[in-house]
Length: 208
Image 1 (cartoon, rainbow, N blue to C red):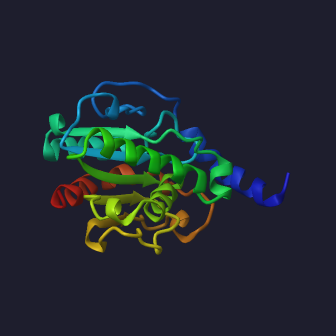
Image 2 (image 1 turned 135 degrees about the vertical axis):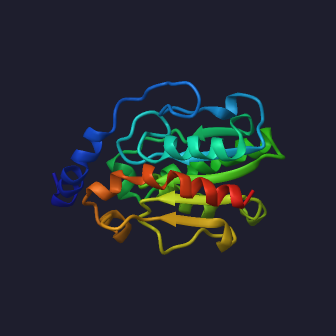
């Protein structure tokens, strides 16, 4: 096995251990969210989970953020849809390119089904890569409509989100999180983004 791949696997070992298998729970606390299967809501969050997380939104950053946002705007006004992608080592090595295409498809689905919904793009760790790639791939007419973008533990934090006004974008990178510096070493800080849930929700609510 190439040493580069070994380094990634060793670095992600504690992250994988900290991510339980997918669980389906009521409301916005579960690691699987398929809000686009239901009725259209005022706001639709499209979220990409981090590497090795279960379900389609994971547990570290997504659910705490969704719950905080639901309290801000009302749970009856919010839909959350996770991006179905492998979230594996291969995705890191291709810099989230394939997953980004899947996120684009979900955005297009959201606007086709619910043309009046306000779409929020969000992702954690490798999922943040997907957000950047999706923004690059979506047409300007679509990105200009995105209500807000929020990423957590973002390896591409300095790249911006093409086509989305800067004032609608927020990156959360905690002190000590080396992933935000392009490293594959997972520190405790990378697993603490639930602590930024309220700040993220406040930011999004302020852009709706």
